Amino acid sequence: MCDCKKPTNKESLIRSRNGPFIIAECGINWRDLVDADQMIKAAAEAGADAAKFQAYTLDYISGHSDEQHLEEIMLDESTTRYLYWRCQQHGIEFMCTPFYPEAVAMLDPYVKRWKVRYADRMNHDILQKCIDTGKEILCSEQSPKVHGQIKSLYCCPEYPPNREITYGDVNGFDGYSCHIPCWRKPEDLLGTGLKYLEVHVRLDHYEPPHYCPIDTAVSITMSELAELCRRLKQ
Image (cartoon, rainbow, N blue to C red; front, side):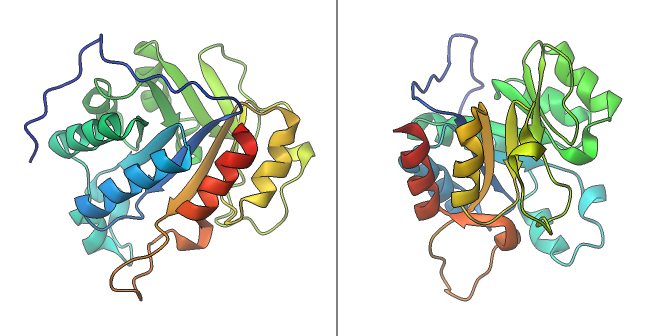
């Protein structure tokens, strides 16, 4: 799929900006590599620091209402390499969440840091493999972890949350993994000095126009992401 070579240790990406490290969670809100490339480009232009995807297997999507689509966008090493290089070309960090332990080895050449989802916050196999790489780990939690390598991101497990998130929820955390499709609330919370913000994103427009990305209910548009970045990084 892609002739791009694997990255070397000398290849790094540093985005020097004020404010929190903002992760644009592209997740499963894309239909093909054209969509994915547009999302990477839009997230970079919006001012996000990283564009994040998800590495899962058929076991995780079995029985899902969009199972066929999710299988079509399932990442292998070649697709991962392609997304990494598109991130490099657009000037944004590539991130990807490993849903299974073996994904850590596949992703390791391409990621600078890890993001572990809430469902795997106590998955020893995944966490230990991430720890063994020596890289920073951002882990969605409801209680902060005390571990130098692991940074805790507050996450409400409801999807989307059925209540407002308050300062009391995020106090003591390193960041916030947001499942609220509104950029104003993260802005309010990040006035507390959180260092990381993960937000689900979608393109402003799709063709055909009636297409609805899977995670629309918890996602902000790229235009909203741009406004969020402008306010938080000014």
